[in-house]
Image (cartoon, rainbow, N blue to C red):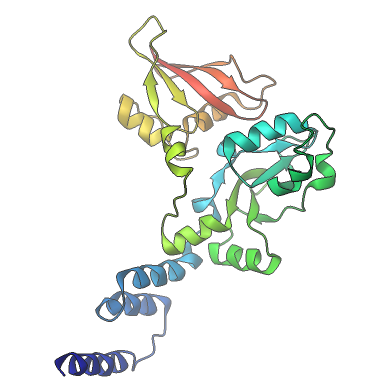
Length: 279
């Protein structure tokens, strides 16, 4: 009987609490936050995430250009398969061969299944790729969620004010703003791929092997550095910002402050591995 009375009192309190309709977003957000007395914490957190979407810009949740795993429209099937296997992604932006900053399509890994029996076969990516969805950096996350739902798409290309590709954003990125981090079996591998390890082969104790996707903030904290992450977030992005577009990234040496960086693994578009030496 006591449980029923308590439940009845709770429902009466909830009806009274909801008696006054909020007139602004802030009032509605406060109402949700005060609802912890009646709702599960996870439910409250999701409601807060939904209400925060209009205030969240795409640039805040996107994967930056320097961290994107992408293809080029003239890539060969064997090279594409290596990218698919190494990344374990299901969708890949395809860049123009003539304009390296322009995405011309999106390739779904499942569209390559008919060709897996002959990895040396000639495949024209242009015939397989889907039309990309573009959205500006300044757009709101709730607007993108609506676009992805209406177009039944899972990925969008983010462009800057000049029309160049600045990153990509996925449906999962938006959902994580609502429900929190969604971890899968590849997330731990991604974290391990950002480790900074001492370079035992170098002739100084102040040398490290650094994954390009290592956050600048983590690099600064671990190695007592002070690089800015206002414009780029990763060490690879920092180097690309310094050297710009070059024909051959591998072997490039960049000196910033009292550090010397050498790119030891890279393809034509992205950096994978770096040697960092404190001078």
